[in-house]
Length: 162
Length: 318
Image 1 (spheres, each protein chain N blue to C red):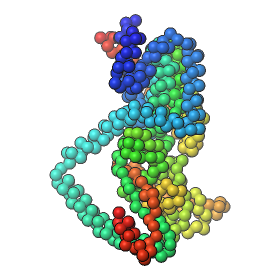
Image 2: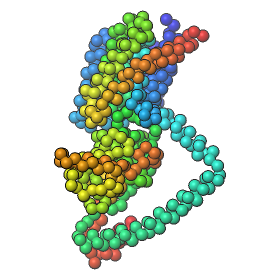
Image 3: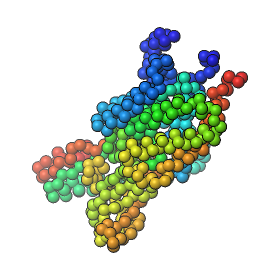
Image 4: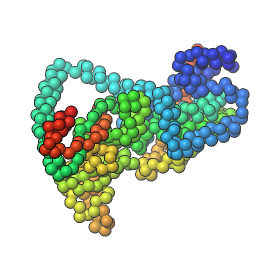
């Protein structure tokens, strides 16, 4: 594998920053509860695409930065990211062969796991009152996975094809 | 290869940032290191240690402050397009509309100034009356104008970010106002920015009193931007629709006397001990872009006596 073309640090970092930006963007009020965890989706993509470069510790660090960015308890997103990265690393050989729909199912369960962890660890009044809308990001995240997957793959492979 | 990188890291002036980037990008130490099970164990233990440590002590605030230096630029660039589009609209406004706005602002300023004149006289009178009652009280606050960043941290919490932090002396639990009323309180102060919890956050409560008769109660956030709940008032409490609620100053966070909300709807529940009362916040929570962070004056204004009146008047003027 050629050393520089296989993995673009710049694109990787930019995609993470862009995902962070999407996560905290001020969407119009009715759309707010639908906003999925873009950072987790992008981390999943990079773990699947370059498992030898992006691993559990990278995911953990990104999670820690996410915690600071969004004002969560330190370690919440770090825990989620490292667990999901672990699942992706374990299954990445199989997941790469799956059609996008089957991948979507896996993503759905990853996002569900992450939302459950938030539900259990955060002891805020807010979540207790949020009812079913709390779980909406799991669905929208799954629906946006193909978009994230194909756009990031296009970005990752852009220079190699040329 | 690794040695080159180490030298680069040591000599790079921005090495903390660089180090974090290195960790995000690739960790050469673990490239052929422990198995992913071990790594997961380390990561999970580290996360849980952080979660527990933050609940037990405030030592981790420093870590958060340092990391917020990295994340603040991301919040700024997220805010940038919207901020910039607003500025563009401002700059291409026609001369006529600007003149009109200017005229309107001038008139408003005149009105406010004349009201302030009266306020100064009232303040003096109030101090004298309180001296008669032998009650000391706190008056006068310092404010700092902070600009809102249009970012949305978490979908279910009403927490906003402003561009002033501990660099400007902001600290947690300061009251935040806008031109119309109480907005919320500083939830977490970071070096470059701070997070502000709005009064409508479901986890927020503010001690209020009814302006008409001084009845005290607590207004709790509802999770909706235009609604507060007053859950602790009995069915026969003296409260009417349209009553103004002002901050009561109890609890020590919010200064006394600022408008908070207007009672909107009262639903009596004869079968329950408390009535269901809703209020609409006076502050324009989803429209204000400039917020005022308030410092309370520490020392209460001393009692005025006949002998020291002159000296105290000088003090009050300060």
